[in-house]
Image (cartoon, rainbow, N blue to C red; front, side):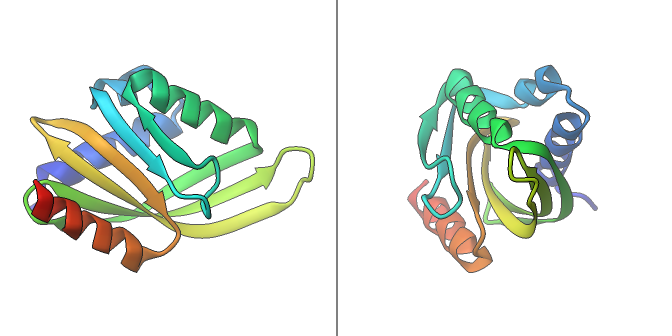
Length: 136
């Protein structure tokens, strides 16, 4: 049986990939926190829907095209989950194709996504989810 966290994450990925930003944002808490480490690019911590949109826009501006395919969702504790995705992008200007696997860390509270972070190292993402789960 599919976990509710998995349903929310899948809904978010599917609506984002269809270009339906409004449906995606409906799943996010208004105070969502986004973290992107330096090795991922567009680094920093961003707050709220406006912060998320600034972060996402900067990311999208770097790519001629960029898609993600959700491979699996892994629940962690009671409030977190990891989303393992394959990403394919073509750099704007360079035309260089990049393919990689990334892991998103999500925290879900009251049916809303309240935290997300992205890593290229699955173990690091899992450690963060476990750490955050213990801190809640």
